[in-house]
Structure formats: structure tokens, C-alpha cells
Length: 76
View 1 (cartoon, rainbow, N blue to C red):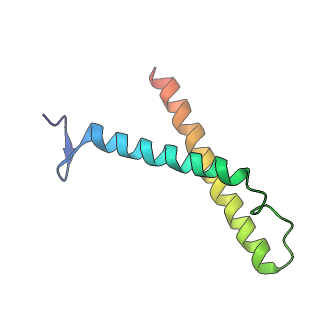
View 2 (view 1 turned 180 degrees about the vertical axis):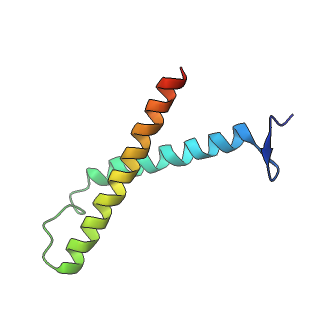
């Protein structure tokens, strides 16, 4: 039986989907952080721009993960 939600989605299922997506994004960020092919010294403006944007994306994913972990601790 559904515990609530909207558009036919069970609220618990929706939370699980979001958690799985967050975990997947964190795993990808961790893998990319170790990839030396991504973090070379940029030689062109385009390479520099792409690396800056990638760093911003990594920071956002990592911040979301920290906030989610803090929320989990607060809820416990």
C-alpha cells in the first residue's frame, strides 16, 4: 500500500530513487577525481573553461552529499 505521494509515486520509492541518484553521482565524482586525464594543466581557454565547470559540478555534488549526510545524522 502506498504511504503517500503524488503522480502515482510512493513517497518512499521517490526518496529511494533520489538517494540512488545522489549515490551514483557521488561515485562518479569520486572516480573522476582520480582520473589524471581530466585534471591536466589546461593549455587553451576552452580546456580551462571545461575544467572550471567540472570543478564547480564536483563541488556541488560533494556539497549535496555533505548536506544529505548531515540531514541523516540530524534525523537519527
